[in-house]
Length: 78
Image (cartoon, rainbow, N blue to C red; front, side, top):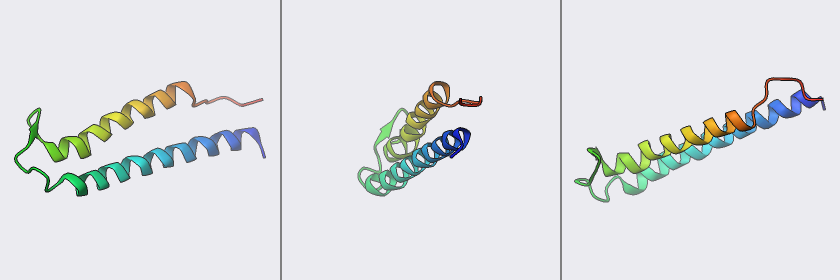
């Protein structure tokens, strides 16, 4: 296999894996905590939305930025 193909395939699989992990956190977390405490509030946001939507969004924003800055390349591997 060509080195560029391997690199881009690895980057694409990592992106899809992160997307699936974030999506499962959002869907599973929303399902698990939606009826737990409807009156609970964290920083003015309903607790279920904070822990199942906002938190994974922020976590995966940091993870994606770290991955992009540390591992993604735009040059030709030799």
